[in-house]
Image (cartoon, rainbow, N blue to C red; front, side, top):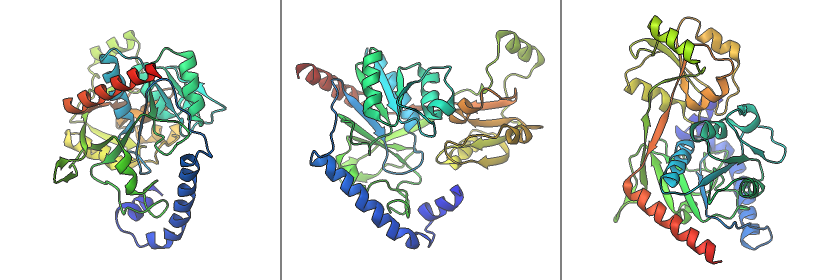
Length: 347
C-alpha cells in the first residue's frame, strides 16, 4: 500500500486524477474548519508559556521527532524546562496519558515513547492537545511547551510554528490529500516561522535560502534489547560486540520514508542482504521478525526499536540519529523564545 501511495504522490501516477474530486472535498472541509477558528466560532486556547508547534503540511515522516529532541536539548542547554505534548498516533488513549520510560508504544505511541526514552522530558499525549498541554502544566514544572505535530490542530494556540520538509521528496505532486501528500496548501508556508529542510537542497529566492538545513547524523548502533551488565560482559568476552559493519544485515523500517533509512545505511557502508519497508507506525508481528533474523542480524530505526524491545533478540540493532542545525538557527530560535517568555509574564 505504501509503495502504491508513493507512486501516486511522488512519481506522477495517473491515478491522482481520479482522486482529485476527493481532494476538493478535503479542501472544502479544511477551509471551513480554519474559518471557524478564524471567526472565533471555535475556541483557540492560549497558554501562559510559549507553545512551539513542530509539524509539516505533508502526510508522512519528514524528521519531526529528531527535531523535537533537538529543541528539547537546545532549550535545556539554555536553562529552560521544556515539556512535550503529542497526539500519540496509533495508540488508543482515553483522555490524556503521561509518558514514562516504562510506557508501552501501543499505549502512548511510538514517537512519544522514543522522545521520552531519549530525553526523559515531561510528556503528555492525547487526541485533545489543549487538554494534554493543560495537564502538562498542572503536573510538571515546564516553562516551554513543544507540540509534536499539530500544525493543523488549531484549537491549541501557538507562538512559534516550525514546518519540516523532506529535502528529497519535498511536496510531491503538490495536491491535497488523498490525491497528493498535502494536508494544507503551499500557501500555509507563508505563515510559518521556520521551514526546516531535512537533508537539502535548500529552496532559495533572490535574498538567499528560505529554509533551514537539518542534517541527521548517525550515532553508534545500539541493541534493541537492553543488556544487563553481566550480559554485556559475556558479549564482549565472546567477541559479539559490536555488530561489524562489513557483516550482511537485514534492514527494516516502519517510518514515513523507509528508503531514506536504507540509503543512509548503504552510505555508511552496511551490506544490506534484504530491506523490508513497513507502513509508518507499523505494529510488528514478532514471528515475522524472528524469521527474518533467524540467520542474519536485523537493523532497524530507533522508532521501530521502541516497539520491539520487549521481544527483541540479541542480534537486533537500531541506529540512532541526531538532528544537526546551524548556530544561526539556534540563536534566532532562543532569542524568540526568550522574548515570548518575557511577554507572557507581562500579560
